[in-house]
Image (cartoon, rainbow, N blue to C red; front, top):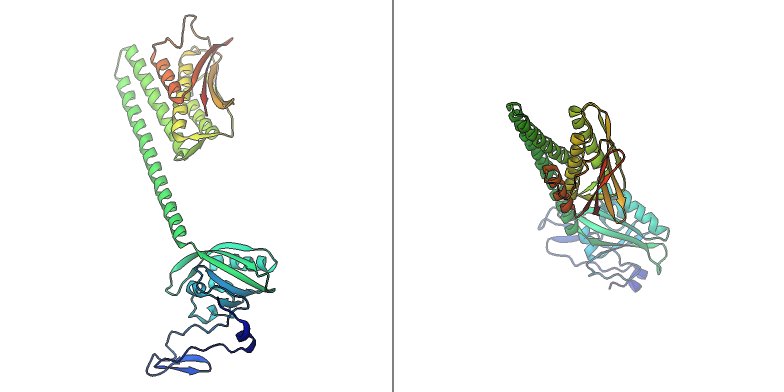
Length: 374
């Protein structure tokens, strides 16, 4: 501890002893011919008087006693290490806020104002040390109860944490770039496969074979639409279900219009819930398969009709449904026993979601609903 008691009253502060090649001029060191030239030498820190309160000189945190206007009255060893104490305007008597980088000057001034008003001020700022390195500090400025009109600034170094934070931000940005590049390539890959299937279908004469390839082409197209929407929704983390499915609805609507000009697709998507990217892929593929099946089987080619895709909360989970106003299912149709490729894919996707499929016969039409946990 550094006590100011009698020395503060008399002003008798100890002077450092002169060294070889160094003389004393007006109470300050000056280099002689045996040392460095006086006008080119690195100046020694201005001797500072002890504080009006006791401060631990060897504290690992920077401790600075300030006047209510932010004038530096005293700095302990750690605080002197923080600042460029060789520079005169960093020495006692200077403005404390001047020791911070310009970007944190306003925060330092505000912290002083808060403390002068009796409330602790806080900010995280950076400054240059004696070697010109940028160092980061978590700073609190508070009034000194035992010494009215004086403030205490405590600075704890957080350079390592700040560097780790910056490294993490760089890594996340790199991950984002990789994710977007992979997503872009996946979508391009689907489009290439879709184009190859289309070319092969046009070369076939047999109707059944053409229908099979057309179904395969539609499923590849649906996969491409799902991944494109995930790419647009930035699905590297979580996905907002409303925006994602609403966009997918727009894509499916365009695809349906191309194949069946009299059908319309209506979307009723709830808001306020999110899901992981992996779960969103499953949900998107299931929605696309259900809509595609409804588009193929619900309405005759010469009759207009409506298909509705909906996603709403249901208890602690969600309900995805696709309904139509078409002719309805054949009387003998059993979804659980169907061996068709479409129903086989739907059952597998429902199982992956951990959900339950319910099929209802409407008047008119059909409704496929999937209840799955959040």
